[in-house]
Image (cartoon, rainbow, N blue to C red; front, side, top):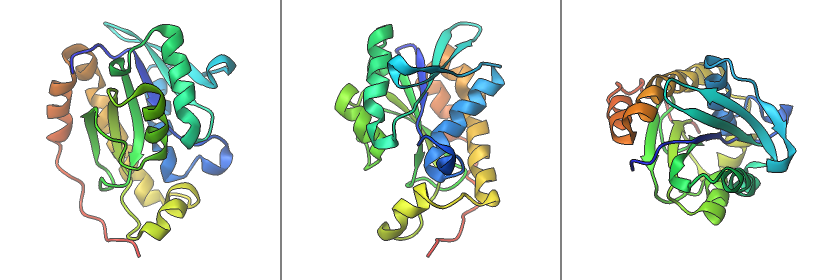
Length: 202
C-alpha cells in the first residue's frame, strides 16, 4: 500500500458517558495526535463530526472524529472523504481491538472488519481498502461480557496507561508512515517488545 495518507480518523462513541471506555481508544489517539501538533478540533455538522488540520513537514492532513455512534460512523467518514476527494486507501482508521493484548499497537492494510461495529459501518460505505491502526484493549474472556467491557465499564487506570503507551508508540511512527510508507512504519511499530501479559478477565 503506497498511497499517501490524507486523512486520519479516530473512532469512538460521543458523549461524556463514553469518554473513559475502551471502545473510545480511537478518539484517545486522535486527541493525542491533535495535541502533539497543537491542532484544535472544530465541529463540522456537514460531515457529522469534529475535524482538525495537521501540518507536517511534508503533508497537510485531516484529522477527524465522527460524532454519530460507532455503528453509524461510516456515513460520516464517507461524507468527509467524498467532499475532499480522498480515496479509501488514503485513510487511516484508528480503533480499539479486542484481539490484541493491552498495550499493543499494530498497523494493517485492508482486510475484514473482524466484527468491529465501527469498521463494519465503514466497510458499508468505503469498502475495505483503508489502513487501520489497531489499538489493543484486551478481551474480557467471554463473548457475553464484550459489550459492557467496551462501552459501559470505565477503563481502570492501569489499563489506561497501557493503552496510552500503545498510542505513544503509534505516534512515534506517524512521521515514518507519512514520509516512508506503510511497510516501513509497520516494521518499526511491530518490532516493539510486547507488553507483559495481563491475566484473562473472567
